[in-house]
Length: 150
Image (tube, rainbow, N blue to C red; front, side):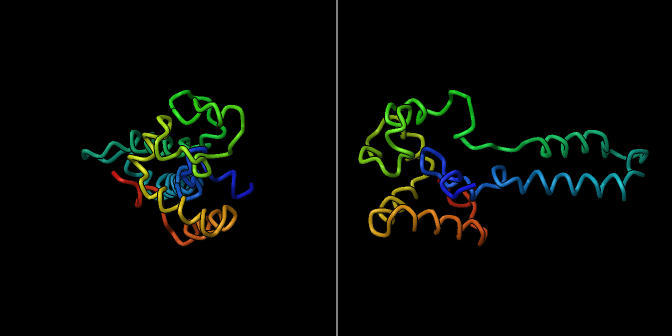
């Protein structure tokens, strides 16, 4: 997968999200395996621990991957309603001169205000360097959940 495929249409770098990278899925799968191997005795324990529901919770995480908005078909994202995106005139909002005022990016501007810094970086260093930097940050452990505004 190319680095640009890790970038959402809105400019958020999905490669910094554990749901997109399948880290959560993989950890839940491994943890469930260990629980079933080493803690199956809890199924018969007479305390308030609900072993079966705990495993169901882990199964939920096993099946909760995010394909990213490029592959998603849901209509909840206003960015996908943008004519420039629909016509593939631009690949993502970070390279659009209207980002700061576009009604389709209101959500992103409020939740991911750090994107304004990314726009400045792209203008100075270029788009390919931006993608390399975001990938590097993701490998170093930067997560969207840590840098977003809520």
